[in-house]
Length: 296
Image (cartoon, rainbow, N blue to C red; front, side, top):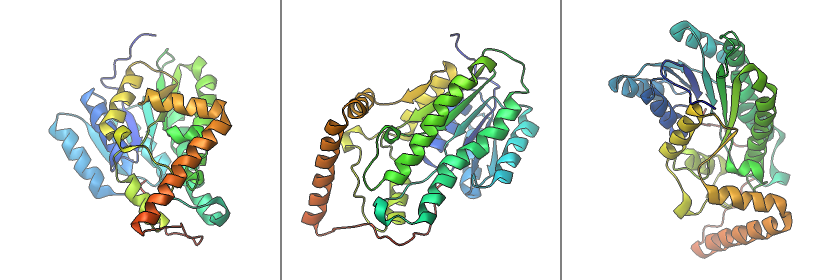
């Protein structure tokens, strides 16, 4: 497949106020893409637009809560009004929290599904309508969904998050095949642990230190690593974007051999709990509802 010249092709990025979204906006702008950055924290978006402009890029900040269908429609309209078209969308907004399944409230589960999964659709649907108005070519447009490496496995205490990431993974794969004939590429992005404010928010929303197994410190990556991988995918579209071959094969084995996967997770979980006991900081996520102050 021929490489895509990204210069002049507008992209919408949700969850752009920090982390992977922020880094991806800068990376795309450096490729010459007009960037529309969206999130709920307008002050952060303005700083991002200023940084992009200082490097000679073009960017527009739009306050958007992906839970709101109207906000998402307005976001798409602002992009087409400012840049005359949409080429790509990176649906990146989302959050996580830890809770054992039996202690999770209906409102907690509904809330994370509404933002991480339904929020993805809220953005993709109007964006796709706009993309389909572009002339039919092999590279008509590109939809990217920020899933996760945990989309391939149910993570203890973190199951609600991994559920929503799996939902994104599944619809992304279906859409990839459904839209192929129309020249619209669909990719799912599967980051491993990334050094962003995400984990601090998880800790805050969960009422204590993390219990679920985490990416080993030696494998943690920067958001810029993910951003570079996304740009490579935009230039040369592919179905899944991974930044760790080791993690990809580990999860493939855990899926193919679930008993082995359970043993590995059990070992990591027990080690995490023992570490907390030794430090005297045993945390068990409470069953009551949490106030969701998530990154979107």
